[in-house]
Length: 599
Image (cartoon, one colour):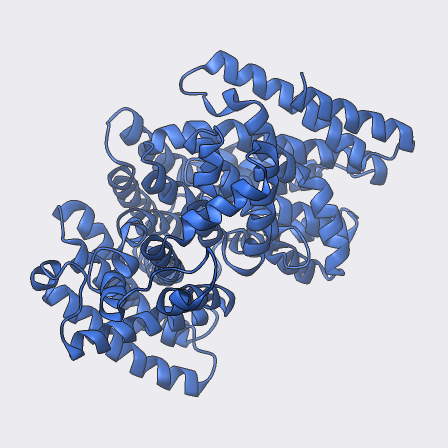
């Protein structure tokens, strides 16, 4: 019996999760966000509050764990929808107030919306991000009482609350606009692909390409997780989905359990840096840098490839240490099966990229077209048998998945938007930038290391996208003032915001993989850090070799630098992992470092 034949789509966890009401709500969310793409321009104070209203039932009720949470969730949802509706209905009048609240009702609604955004994020992802946002809000309200350079002159409460809740800043700022018009569309795209047979296609293709090599099961995990992660944008979700297939396969082939978990955690973490989608980060980067999406894809491509090549070299080193065998030919899918199942992701992906590069459409419009192609493919199973009941059940799963994922990401971005709004109002970002410059003595490399440390610390507590947004808001200007080009600074911060997925003490991808494989999480984490060493080195290598991100403008220079860095990373990875004499390993690491940063 073949390993890679089960459907990749996970069923909802309980009967309530597949209730028709949630299917309908998911469908409404999908129709609303797709409709904005085709309807035309919609005022920000209409589309963004409605976006928040749609996410409230998911994070406050659907994700509730107790009856008390469910009851309070319904109450907050009803009040929240009313508050968001007030903003949308009175959009024209509020726009003329320029962010200054002038009635007690507006103040009550504004304060409630801020509290609701914090609570929605808390229920979606836990306390850390809401606590960061709450500290920022307290600083905005009381920072005038702080002594020294970090105090501010003071903000009138009506102005602060109004800017954050009734103007196109704070909750309804540009980050939320990205969530509404771009991130939601690509979340729907990923949900539609995952509801069909695209996941099975990824697994089959990876098995056919890499399964025959030494350490083949681990290399299957690397390729399949890279492909899946490029559309899911979540390391944890990627570990839970592809890991359900790849981890048992590795264990059955007598891989050390710690290695099996580490491979999946590292491979899944890399999905967030793999174009074309890169989770929500790429689209937030478009908004923050003003760089076209296609240029960000080109800039991110070679570093992502280098990351997975480094993981591949590490697997080879472990394969020689543990005599890891290829996947048996009888367990690898045949060419026909690979060709058929690959169609389920190839058709939407090719259409997406063709519409962007050849058609000249925006990424969100191109993705909308690809979504309709993906929906058409839901009529077929892996044998290409047409089934209307199968289409209906797959579409229902897609609607629920899309509604839930849009809500979670939206809750994160709304909460992070409060932080960014306060930074803008108070000038705190400029003060932190000045502190970084002062501590680094106006030198680039110390500033980079300080920024990396900040990203690691913040990334331990908040999701990657939120950590990236907050860190780049305060550290980005410091790095650019020291000569780093803006896109490179943003990629540097974005990569280091990922560190916490595999770095103790808080490493979400490792925790999930360790639980799935039944191994001590620290053992998994140490092997993950060795395999994923590229995650620590490549951002610095991009700074030392900036041509790597200029593939669209200087392909020869980019490829030359990428080759140099690839050889250096390979030497470092092999030196860290291979079972050689200590002096040999040290020499490899030293040579690789010299090649990347000195030559």
